[in-house]
Image (cartoon, rainbow, N blue to C red; front, top):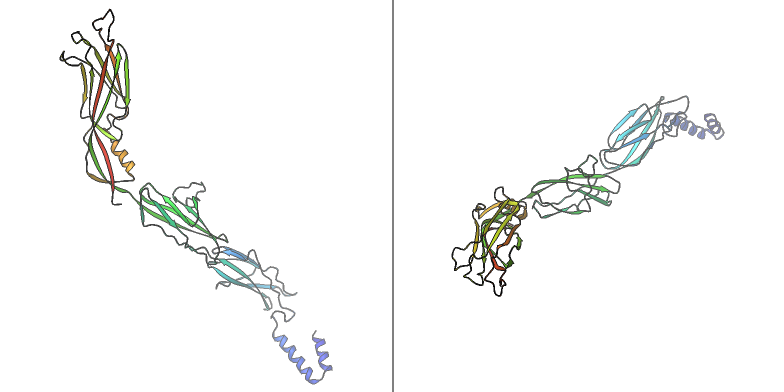
Amino acid sequence: MRDRFVLVAMNTGSRSAATAIAILLLCQMLTGCSGLGPGNPSARIVADTDSINVGETVNFDARDSTSPEPTIIDEYRWHFGDGETKTTKQGIVSHMFSHAGNYEVQVIVANDEGSTDTASLSVFVNAPPTIVLVIPDFIRTGDTATLDASDSTDLEGGALEFLWDFDAILDSNGDSDPTNDADHNGAVAELMLTKSGNHTGAITVVDDNGETATALWTLRVIPRTFRVVWEEVHVDFEWSGYLEQGASYEIEHIPGEGARIIQVIATLTLARDLLPIQWPEDNFTLELDVPLAGWRTSVITIHDNITENASATLERGEMNDNPESGFTTTAESSESLAASLLNQPGQRFGEGSWGWTITAVDCDPDLPIDGVDPDEGNDWRLEVQFVVMILRISEIGV
């Protein structure tokens, strides 16, 4: 090439020859610039990806770069575009990008004569979404909280996906990460909590490049405040019927539901015989069975006065204590408070079903009329009076 250039210059005159010599000298001075000089290397660079998320690593490869024989590539000078540089003897390198943006990555390939060449490529680093979460300062037990992440953004303007984990302690999907259980999808979630205390969950926001951001949130749940009043109420029951000798009548009911039983008085009364002068008169038994209390008892009618109806009375007082009334307390709900007050140990006597059995044990024949007993049984009436304490719960401070 150099010989040809001189030959042409000599054939074109002295001015052309001077120009040719100047160009020749310039080429010699620029040895090592890309495309100039026979000993210049040729740089090549590739990457395993051109798009990553913040915090991920890219692998760069410049091993396809060449240098004319007999020169060899001596080093690779890497410029990652984020202010970081590195020099290696091998043509491969890895780099992690900590910030989002578009970066021009360059490799300068230098051979052992000091000649260099440059190659570059671009890498896009995707930013994680920015989570903006709005939740209530607190809610009361049983209320519904609205959790709003709709103001969350993606730096690149992509679409977002929202995954809510309502309990950051419980790992419901069994992957050893208690914060990624997908309990709800969508920018807004509603959550109702029945237990007071600090409740922690998590939200994960995913952009269209698969980059995620996760934030823990804590919702304060406070108990409700109630006023408790016990009201004394008298509850009366009455049944009646007719029984012949040896027959029975059974009654089953629940007298103290939602209340605390304090006292019971039951009176069984028989109607007078058709002929009051007959003696002895009829007698019935009254039996009581309260299974949950383990209480069984019975009485039989008697005649205190021949002029009055036969009767029997069953009475029991102070079955439970009179409860404290008119105080305030906190609880998760009125239902849980009522359950705890009505089921206090030692104050549950008389709960459940009560069974009454009336039996005609002795219906003596009346004076026969034409040899026939005109009344082979008797009419009866059972009156039961309960004194109970009814629980009244009202919420305050709502």
